[in-house]
Image (tube, rainbow, N blue to C red):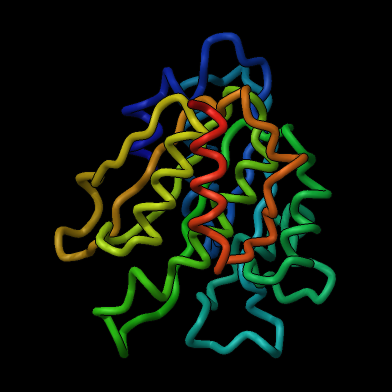
Length: 232
């Protein structure tokens, strides 16, 4: 995360910013929060930094231990900054959780969204891209709702072979002025993760009016087609 922030620092933290509002999705145990805090302290000490975060609640009885990280040190120390939704689960695949995050973060008020979501696929590694696609789709759509004009999104993906991932890239490309896919040096070589950086949200598209951000995943492809036509 820090490597990405430093490499694209002039794009993520533009010179005219006086405050920086961040939303961290699927964030436990808190590495992206720590990286961004350290980066801003080193690079822009005078910038006012505010952040919110969401993740699977490690204390909720419906969340199985194998689906989440149990390290709660950062959550415990900064509990007021975390959003778990009305059922307190923190499950981003539930529309109620997404509604709660949007309500607290505000539509069009966030400078940068980071999304580190994944699902344990150790039992079926060949299905990782397909299994994690609905979660990544939810992260992308929620980011489009809360980002301000000119905001940035840093989204973790895996391989890019399935049509759902290609369509995610299409939606990202028509939604932002610049799209970068990179593999940080610090990321393990044997890990398929890559990071997608989207910079400057497209001002021509009105996500608050038309995008069903609660992630009706079966309609994903038709959504991509409709929005790609809007900018041509």
